[in-house]
Image (tube, rainbow, N blue to C red):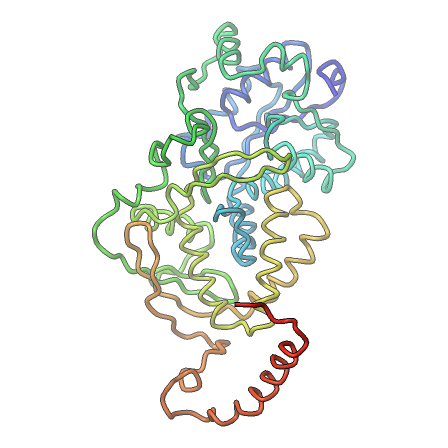
Length: 413
């Protein structure tokens, strides 16, 4: 689809309000195309005032510009990612990927109410976000078409680069904060920040080159342990340090505490994008990192061997589904049935110590579904579990091992 195909249709632009958004809205409106601009408030910590974005988009030529709150939806989805232990390659917590899913979900009522024919976005043709936006839209609103300017040859020829877009906006008299000298790009929401491109494409650039926003580098964190307690009820954090709060506030509180201790700051990953190329990202996700660690401790206490193995398999599949934009697929629905079922047993209180980017377990209390038996696990002669009961088990295990040896199937030293 190219720009000429949009004439006479109702267009919704999913915009963040930055350089790409301003450029695309002006480029479309300048050719007589009516554009409704929609920004979703995901608690972006790099934005001082999201309320100015609608006016900025109208100045760029949007017929209508909307700002909707998506923080609750993002928190809900992010918690499901954590419950699924669905971190991607190298420990990236999929904070940008799941934010795209929340964006489309929050935009869906606007698409329906405005009778939108085409949705447009500013994702490039080299990254994951084009896949995320478009698969989510295809699964939730199959009647809607998608226009991707970066895949329009006319747009690429005229505006296919940061420098060209900045020059275009300057010629059009549009104010943008982007500069040609910015050494990397940042995508943000209150669950995490993604830094990539620019100087970060060079593998000689250290992760601490980034000017961190959600916290400090572990090396700059205080030389003192800070203890933190999270109370979970059926997989949901309901209190931090004894103070009751909703999940959005819980994420934001943990961001502050984790961030000031360097936890989840500067996670450096060279990953495989869905389209096949490798890319490097430097991530910030302090609150998510703390919450995920504490939730994992509850899983260790409540899952038996079989469900632990099942969880490990499901986690990787769910992580791939989020990263690759398949959150609303039948596969994800099936995976989430398992992880959300397991979450019903995840009740308890976990205390950890934070120190210079590290998280250390301190205590677990009031975990009613815990399978951990202190007496049974002891090396002392206590509890009901008898050492002699293992004799029959070991006889069977030894028999099988010896049969493998006799059959010539064991590995040589």
